[in-house]
Length: 246
Image (cartoon, rainbow, N blue to C red; front, side, top):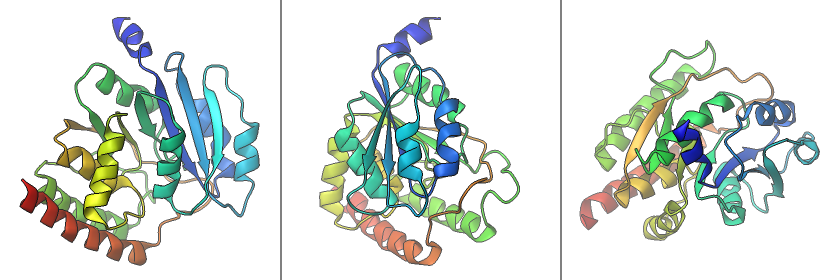
């Protein structure tokens, strides 16, 4: 019971980047648990081929304050940054719209922060067995290779840096901006910017295993090879920053 009281002291923002996700949004929002009053959800809509924006605007909730913004630029990272500018919560969650992670799990993510066990909670898909077809083999192998390199750079035994579910304190936002200025390499997803900014500034990072599900509606927005090359450049530059500034 104390946890709940303690938790409700924090204002919370849940950012949902959504592009071509009309078939997932209503279920996603309905399944977000009651996290106490003062919880806002910002659905950050990219230019979609389906009715994502109209569906987002039609969703109502008893205990969530739902806000919808239209992205001015493209890409998942931009969806997150634009929503962050708009957000007001003291603790911020990012939840992908594809239902590959159970929205109910947010409760556990927020609890770790509100009990002050960490400043940053990173979801990991690579601990539990995944649903068949949830991640293509090439993506899985790529993720594990990236992960090995990421762990070497940030000197933390992380298992999954590209999981879309992350929860962190608002104070990280300024640190992200200064990390981006320092690095000058764009992260197409935003996952690395979040994680590396937290690690670089010495925040306490904890991983929380999640069950990774197969997408039911729509298809993945990832351009495997094009984005992969960008991430490799990003990692090389990050390695340099972590090793020359400390």
